[in-house]
Image (cartoon, rainbow, N blue to C red):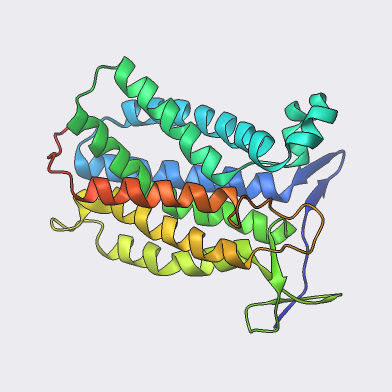
Length: 256
């Protein structure tokens, strides 16, 4: 098993940096760097991409918070409504972030009156970049252990003081490595590059659906279940369906 560790804050004199927030910020910066590199190769306006990313991030954070409040801890936030605004206390839904980001993305791209093919091409590029940034952001989750799994004595389990237990963020990072390697190898592929987004959606949706069966159910704050499935699993089904739909699309990309 992996020795137990926990790294939650970095004290810098009078300032205290939250490790989770630091890695989220590093993940965003990495994705922006990848977007810039890809924009040069694909001859897409990087200024347009950065504007879209801004509204995508705004929608993502709002969606992540709202879905967490409604789907995971509604009674807690109804009893303490001011806590809804204290995002530094934690409580963001990854799939809520995805759906909120999609709303921000489509709102801004429609405002710019981009064609369907242009919107798809940009979404495809953002999806490619997001995988690498997402993995870095998940490192923050793995450092603070905010997604515990079931007790386990397997090699990837964390040897906590109370026994071995899976860390779902760590498992997600490990499971995303093959996808990240494949994306990097195929980054200039004429055969696959147009289908990065749907492949990512199907891969991640299936991954999350399976992994959520191993989330803890015996700890305080464990993910709520609805008819035996987590909110993340229901979202994963939607994401996989969307990915399959996009894989069957015949729309061809245009340069932006």
